[in-house]
Picture 1 (tube, one colour):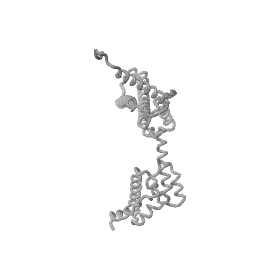
Picture 2 (cartoon, rainbow, N blue to C red):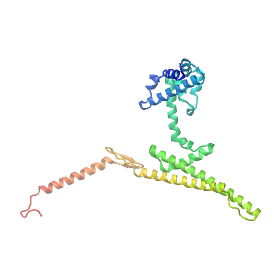
Picture 3 (spheres, rainbow, N blue to C red):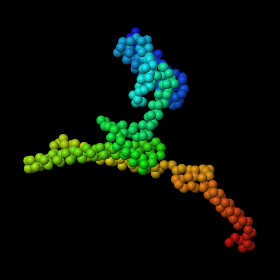
Length: 287
Protein backbone atom coordinates (compact mmCIF):
# COMPACT_ATOMS: atom_id res chain seq x y z
CA UNK A 1 0.00 0.00 0.00
CA UNK A 2 1.37 3.40 -0.97
CA UNK A 3 1.96 6.10 1.65
CA UNK A 4 -0.95 8.22 0.41
CA UNK A 5 -3.31 5.22 0.49
CA UNK A 6 -2.12 4.30 3.98
CA UNK A 7 -2.72 7.80 5.24
CA UNK A 8 -6.15 7.87 3.62
CA UNK A 9 -7.03 4.56 5.25
CA UNK A 10 -5.93 5.78 8.65
CA UNK A 11 -7.73 9.09 8.25
CA UNK A 12 -10.88 7.22 7.31
CA UNK A 13 -10.97 5.89 10.85
CA UNK A 14 -11.10 9.41 12.24
CA UNK A 15 -13.19 9.18 15.40
CA UNK A 16 -16.27 11.35 15.81
CA UNK A 17 -17.11 13.20 18.99
CA UNK A 18 -19.12 11.07 21.39
CA UNK A 19 -22.83 12.00 21.53
CA UNK A 20 -22.49 12.76 25.23
CA UNK A 21 -19.97 15.49 24.36
CA UNK A 22 -21.58 16.97 21.25
CA UNK A 23 -24.98 16.89 22.87
CA UNK A 24 -23.80 19.25 25.62
CA UNK A 25 -22.17 21.71 23.23
CA UNK A 26 -24.13 24.61 21.74
CA UNK A 27 -25.26 23.78 18.21
CA UNK A 28 -23.29 26.74 16.79
CA UNK A 29 -19.93 25.39 18.01
CA UNK A 30 -20.36 21.58 18.00
CA UNK A 31 -19.38 21.22 14.35
CA UNK A 32 -16.35 23.51 14.66
CA UNK A 33 -15.06 21.68 17.73
CA UNK A 34 -15.55 18.32 16.03
CA UNK A 35 -13.67 19.42 12.91
CA UNK A 36 -10.76 20.83 14.93
CA UNK A 37 -10.39 17.62 16.94
CA UNK A 38 -10.67 15.47 13.80
CA UNK A 39 -7.97 17.54 12.07
CA UNK A 40 -5.69 17.09 15.08
CA UNK A 41 -6.24 13.33 14.95
CA UNK A 42 -5.40 13.30 11.24
CA UNK A 43 -2.16 15.22 11.85
CA UNK A 44 -1.08 12.74 14.52
CA UNK A 45 -1.88 9.75 12.30
CA UNK A 46 0.11 11.35 9.48
CA UNK A 47 3.04 11.92 11.83
CA UNK A 48 3.04 8.32 13.10
CA UNK A 49 2.82 6.89 9.59
CA UNK A 50 5.28 9.22 7.87
CA UNK A 51 7.89 9.91 10.54
CA UNK A 52 7.72 6.80 12.76
CA UNK A 53 6.85 4.39 9.94
CA UNK A 54 3.79 2.97 11.70
CA UNK A 55 1.12 1.04 9.85
CA UNK A 56 -2.34 2.66 9.63
CA UNK A 57 -3.64 0.34 12.33
CA UNK A 58 -0.73 1.14 14.65
CA UNK A 59 -1.04 4.86 13.94
CA UNK A 60 -4.76 4.78 14.76
CA UNK A 61 -4.13 2.99 18.07
CA UNK A 62 -1.41 5.44 19.10
CA UNK A 63 -3.38 8.52 18.03
CA UNK A 64 -6.36 7.48 20.14
CA UNK A 65 -4.47 6.14 23.15
CA UNK A 66 -5.66 8.23 26.09
CA UNK A 67 -2.85 6.95 28.34
CA UNK A 68 -3.00 5.89 31.97
CA UNK A 69 -4.60 7.68 34.90
CA UNK A 70 -1.42 9.61 35.68
CA UNK A 71 -1.28 11.02 32.15
CA UNK A 72 -4.95 11.94 32.33
CA UNK A 73 -4.31 13.88 35.53
CA UNK A 74 -1.41 15.69 33.87
CA UNK A 75 -3.71 16.73 31.05
CA UNK A 76 -6.33 18.00 33.46
CA UNK A 77 -3.75 20.08 35.33
CA UNK A 78 -2.44 21.95 32.28
CA UNK A 79 -2.83 25.73 31.99
CA UNK A 80 -5.73 26.62 29.70
CA UNK A 81 -3.56 28.21 26.99
CA UNK A 82 -1.42 25.08 26.59
CA UNK A 83 -4.08 22.55 25.52
CA UNK A 84 -4.03 21.20 21.99
CA UNK A 85 -7.00 19.86 20.03
CA UNK A 86 -5.37 16.45 20.04
CA UNK A 87 -5.16 16.43 23.85
CA UNK A 88 -8.79 17.47 24.08
CA UNK A 89 -9.62 14.58 21.75
CA UNK A 90 -7.69 12.18 24.01
CA UNK A 91 -9.74 13.35 26.98
CA UNK A 92 -12.91 12.79 24.99
CA UNK A 93 -11.77 9.25 24.17
CA UNK A 94 -11.43 8.51 27.87
CA UNK A 95 -14.35 10.53 29.26
CA UNK A 96 -16.56 12.83 27.17
CA UNK A 97 -17.86 14.49 30.32
CA UNK A 98 -14.32 15.38 31.43
CA UNK A 99 -13.49 16.74 27.97
CA UNK A 100 -16.65 18.85 28.00
CA UNK A 101 -15.73 20.21 31.42
CA UNK A 102 -12.25 21.17 30.22
CA UNK A 103 -13.69 22.90 27.14
CA UNK A 104 -16.15 24.90 29.24
CA UNK A 105 -13.32 25.86 31.62
CA UNK A 106 -11.24 27.11 28.70
CA UNK A 107 -14.11 29.29 27.50
CA UNK A 108 -14.80 30.65 30.97
CA UNK A 109 -11.16 31.55 31.55
CA UNK A 110 -10.99 33.16 28.11
CA UNK A 111 -13.90 35.40 29.10
CA UNK A 112 -12.19 36.31 32.38
CA UNK A 113 -8.96 37.11 30.57
CA UNK A 114 -10.77 39.35 28.08
CA UNK A 115 -12.87 41.21 30.64
CA UNK A 116 -9.92 41.77 32.99
CA UNK A 117 -7.79 43.38 30.27
CA UNK A 118 -5.04 40.75 30.29
CA UNK A 119 -5.97 39.66 26.78
CA UNK A 120 -5.49 43.19 25.44
CA UNK A 121 -2.00 43.64 26.87
CA UNK A 122 -0.75 40.33 25.46
CA UNK A 123 -0.84 41.88 21.99
CA UNK A 124 1.83 44.36 23.13
CA UNK A 125 3.99 42.15 25.32
CA UNK A 126 7.43 41.00 24.24
CA UNK A 127 10.17 40.45 26.77
CA UNK A 128 8.18 42.30 29.43
CA UNK A 129 7.43 41.55 33.06
CA UNK A 130 4.70 41.82 35.71
CA UNK A 131 5.34 45.54 36.26
CA UNK A 132 4.70 46.33 32.59
CA UNK A 133 1.39 44.47 32.70
CA UNK A 134 0.39 46.19 35.95
CA UNK A 135 1.13 49.58 34.35
CA UNK A 136 -1.11 48.76 31.39
CA UNK A 137 -3.94 47.61 33.66
CA UNK A 138 -3.63 50.88 35.59
CA UNK A 139 -4.13 52.85 32.35
CA UNK A 140 -7.09 50.67 31.41
CA UNK A 141 -8.66 51.05 34.85
CA UNK A 142 -8.52 54.83 34.55
CA UNK A 143 -10.36 54.74 31.21
CA UNK A 144 -12.92 52.26 32.56
CA UNK A 145 -13.67 54.43 35.57
CA UNK A 146 -14.22 57.48 33.38
CA UNK A 147 -16.22 55.96 30.53
CA UNK A 148 -17.96 53.06 32.29
CA UNK A 149 -18.42 51.10 29.04
CA UNK A 150 -21.74 49.53 28.18
CA UNK A 151 -21.40 46.34 26.21
CA UNK A 152 -18.73 44.57 24.20
CA UNK A 153 -18.07 47.26 21.59
CA UNK A 154 -17.34 49.97 24.14
CA UNK A 155 -15.15 47.55 26.13
CA UNK A 156 -13.17 46.80 22.95
CA UNK A 157 -12.72 50.52 22.28
CA UNK A 158 -11.52 51.04 25.86
CA UNK A 159 -8.97 48.25 25.38
CA UNK A 160 -7.82 49.92 22.15
CA UNK A 161 -7.50 53.24 23.97
CA UNK A 162 -5.33 51.61 26.63
CA UNK A 163 -3.20 49.84 24.00
CA UNK A 164 -2.57 52.98 21.96
CA UNK A 165 -1.78 55.07 25.03
CA UNK A 166 0.62 52.40 26.32
CA UNK A 167 2.29 52.31 22.88
CA UNK A 168 2.48 56.10 22.84
CA UNK A 169 4.21 56.15 26.25
CA UNK A 170 6.65 53.42 25.21
CA UNK A 171 7.75 55.21 22.04
CA UNK A 172 7.89 58.55 23.84
CA UNK A 173 10.31 56.97 26.31
CA UNK A 174 12.39 55.60 23.42
CA UNK A 175 12.50 59.05 21.81
CA UNK A 176 13.51 60.68 25.07
CA UNK A 177 16.20 58.07 25.70
CA UNK A 178 17.75 58.38 22.22
CA UNK A 179 17.72 62.17 22.10
CA UNK A 180 19.00 62.55 25.65
CA UNK A 181 21.80 60.02 25.14
CA UNK A 182 22.86 61.60 21.86
CA UNK A 183 22.74 65.06 23.43
CA UNK A 184 24.99 64.04 26.31
CA UNK A 185 27.41 62.36 23.90
CA UNK A 186 27.61 65.46 21.72
CA UNK A 187 28.12 67.66 24.79
CA UNK A 188 31.04 65.51 25.91
CA UNK A 189 32.59 65.61 22.41
CA UNK A 190 32.14 69.39 22.28
CA UNK A 191 34.03 69.82 25.55
CA UNK A 192 36.78 67.49 24.38
CA UNK A 193 37.21 68.59 20.75
CA UNK A 194 35.95 72.15 20.94
CA UNK A 195 33.46 71.82 18.05
CA UNK A 196 30.09 70.20 17.37
CA UNK A 197 29.68 67.09 15.24
CA UNK A 198 26.38 66.33 13.48
CA UNK A 199 24.60 63.15 14.60
CA UNK A 200 25.40 59.93 12.81
CA UNK A 201 22.96 58.72 10.14
CA UNK A 202 21.90 55.73 12.21
CA UNK A 203 21.15 57.86 15.25
CA UNK A 204 19.25 60.43 13.21
CA UNK A 205 17.12 57.71 11.62
CA UNK A 206 16.40 56.22 15.03
CA UNK A 207 15.28 59.58 16.36
CA UNK A 208 13.06 60.18 13.32
CA UNK A 209 11.53 56.71 13.61
CA UNK A 210 10.82 57.14 17.31
CA UNK A 211 9.22 60.54 16.73
CA UNK A 212 7.10 59.11 13.91
CA UNK A 213 5.91 56.23 16.12
CA UNK A 214 5.04 58.65 18.93
CA UNK A 215 2.93 60.65 16.49
CA UNK A 216 1.35 57.50 15.03
CA UNK A 217 0.23 56.10 18.38
CA UNK A 218 -1.05 59.50 19.45
CA UNK A 219 -3.19 59.71 16.30
CA UNK A 220 -4.44 56.16 16.86
CA UNK A 221 -5.41 57.12 20.38
CA UNK A 222 -7.34 60.19 19.23
CA UNK A 223 -9.05 58.23 16.43
CA UNK A 224 -10.20 55.57 18.87
CA UNK A 225 -11.39 58.22 21.29
CA UNK A 226 -13.50 59.81 18.56
CA UNK A 227 -14.93 56.42 17.63
CA UNK A 228 -15.93 55.79 21.24
CA UNK A 229 -17.48 59.24 21.53
CA UNK A 230 -19.40 58.88 18.25
CA UNK A 231 -20.61 55.40 19.10
CA UNK A 232 -21.98 56.56 22.43
CA UNK A 233 -23.53 59.67 20.85
CA UNK A 234 -25.45 57.58 18.32
CA UNK A 235 -26.35 54.75 20.69
CA UNK A 236 -30.09 53.88 20.59
CA UNK A 237 -32.28 55.53 23.18
CA UNK A 238 -33.85 53.49 25.94
CA UNK A 239 -37.64 53.24 25.66
CA UNK A 240 -39.56 52.17 28.76
CA UNK A 241 -43.08 50.89 28.29
CA UNK A 242 -45.71 49.87 30.83
CA UNK A 243 -43.55 50.58 33.86
CA UNK A 244 -45.04 51.87 37.08
CA UNK A 245 -41.74 53.33 38.28
CA UNK A 246 -38.40 53.98 36.60
CA UNK A 247 -35.19 54.57 38.58
CA UNK A 248 -32.57 56.71 36.83
CA UNK A 249 -29.50 57.02 39.05
CA UNK A 250 -30.85 58.49 42.30
CA UNK A 251 -34.05 59.88 40.70
CA UNK A 252 -37.29 57.91 40.93
CA UNK A 253 -39.86 58.83 38.31
CA UNK A 254 -43.41 57.62 38.89
CA UNK A 255 -44.47 56.90 35.33
CA UNK A 256 -47.91 55.61 36.22
CA UNK A 257 -49.00 58.83 37.92
CA UNK A 258 -47.64 60.94 35.04
CA UNK A 259 -49.53 58.81 32.53
CA UNK A 260 -52.76 59.21 34.49
CA UNK A 261 -52.28 62.98 34.59
CA UNK A 262 -51.77 63.17 30.83
CA UNK A 263 -54.80 60.99 30.20
CA UNK A 264 -56.98 63.15 32.47
CA UNK A 265 -55.88 66.34 30.69
CA UNK A 266 -56.60 64.80 27.29
CA UNK A 267 -60.05 63.63 28.39
CA UNK A 268 -60.86 67.06 29.81
CA UNK A 269 -59.86 68.72 26.55
CA UNK A 270 -62.01 66.33 24.51
CA UNK A 271 -64.99 67.03 26.76
CA UNK A 272 -64.47 70.74 26.30
CA UNK A 273 -64.38 70.40 22.51
CA UNK A 274 -67.53 68.29 22.44
CA UNK A 275 -69.35 70.83 24.58
CA UNK A 276 -68.33 73.63 22.24
CA UNK A 277 -69.59 71.78 19.17
CA UNK A 278 -72.89 71.03 20.95
CA UNK A 279 -73.79 74.74 21.42
CA UNK A 280 -76.44 76.08 18.91
CA UNK A 281 -75.16 78.55 16.39
CA UNK A 282 -76.44 82.16 16.34
CA UNK A 283 -78.78 83.32 13.50
CA UNK A 284 -75.92 85.28 12.03
CA UNK A 285 -73.87 82.12 11.68
CA UNK A 286 -70.63 81.23 13.35
CA UNK A 287 -68.40 84.00 14.47
